[in-house]
Length: 431
Image (tube, rainbow, N blue to C red; front, side, top):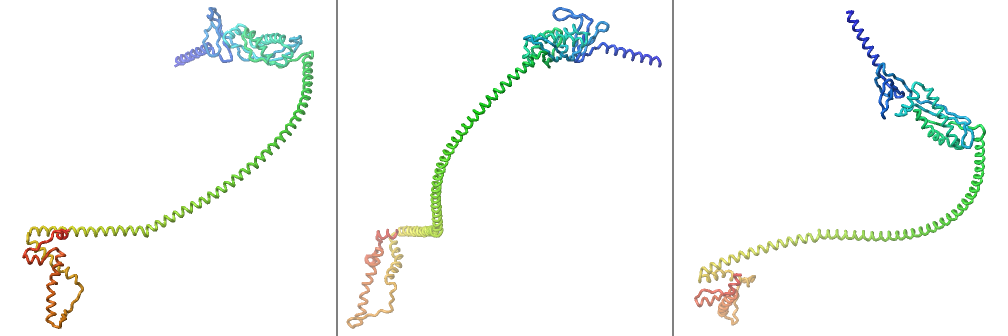
């Protein structure tokens, strides 16, 4: 049991040792630092060889006992830049104070320059070298600018200084982030004199400008009054024109209104006449409807009823005529079939009617008695006269029958022949 514990402790110790060794061999570089791993020769672009490699961010594994790790900070370094009694253009000594922010450049190529110059030196070395370089560049730039240019356009001065120092900073492997000029002075009072001169010039220009402005103001005021008066007159003219136009427009509007009123009145009368005419038309139509309902429709109905009644009567007459024609046709057929006996039958059939017609001539005559008066005073002669009149009466009756029927009964009796029916009256009878 003790052996197992010892073995386990040994294993844990070995694992711990391995982990510590591996951790010491792994190089992890943060973004604000640069790891310089030196100790082994490496080929670089261009055919050369260097004895180090640079790790900027990330991680790598170093070879123990062969490679060594050194660190360089990429943080910004603030440098106070200042020169005194530096001659500017025109031999005017100036005192200039400014501030700059520099750092180790992380760009490929420039980083190697800083590694070769500042590795192991620390931030103080970088600060001092950058300060001396910038102050030297500052004196060189001041010699090309006048005090007025330096003092009045500090942004331009700073930009010229940055451009001048850029090449030197890249050679050192540094990057100039910011350069600002804070103060520019001189010990001979040049800038104060320039300021006073500028101030006097400005005051003079201000007074002149003020006088000019007052003159211009008076001129503008007079011109404004003139323009105002002119505008007032023009406005009065415009108002008068507008008033005239308004009166003309009002007159035209009144004229139009009167015309519209007249047109409206005429239109009203016309509308009233049209309405009355329409009302009269409606009354006429109503009267026509009443006439139609009270007179025409009943008359039309009566007319239609009479037409229907007449048609019914005519139809009855036509049917009766057709029936009589049929009966006569049948009688004619019967008579023709009877031969010579048909005449006697016809006369016998007609005789009651003939007698009725003859009797109808004396219809309504009532004879209570017959008195025979003999003019000679003899009764026997009177009777004989009456008897003597009978043959004449018989002849008269037979003549009437012949006229009515076309049959001469006496002649037929004398010849002892059948009674013949005249052709024309027969045809009339058939019809």
